[in-house]
Length: 259
Image (cartoon, rainbow, N blue to C red; front, side, top):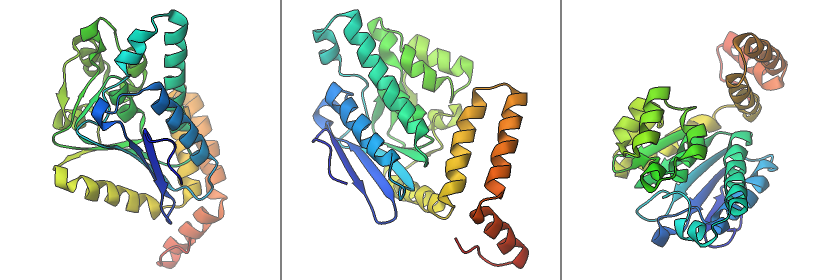
């Protein structure tokens, strides 16, 4: 896949693993309008690719993402502009959830405000021990309202609100404890840990993960009875798919499935 402008580098390997690299290292990979547009276009392209199996989001430089580009925001002080900007950002975040494959955040350095939101929005997240996380807008008089949507769906309420109300940084180790990350590893182990996750995902049938991911997020937003009804239908449909029938038969036959 060709790069979509220089602010975002994108590639996809012969296994169907796409890598999106935030490429504004001199600006701490701040979420500029150009970067938002590049992410929106690239994710839309990936969503229609039937060979896609996983997406990894990483960044160049010392920071993962320092949130929105404050210089751009300050230059256009109008409610209409800000409403449009945050609407576009929210759409990008939601598009990651709607992708039919797992999305993994691969984090180094700081991830603040919308950058922390991006980590929270990904299905899985791995960071190096030198990474740190904050929703620090409140330090500038701006409560991180849109990041709070993703954050509160990862952390407990009190842990999330403490981050939002204080703007304080947490370490990668604390981020694992609070539920923002799956793993925190040494910097020189980051590539390997993400690769291990990807390899594990690639061993599973795409259709099962696609159906499962969609159900996973749908049921989180419904009551328990409706969630069980939806999950029951999803499992029944999944069970009738050839990959599940083969998987179960392979288990019975004590052999590896032929996917």
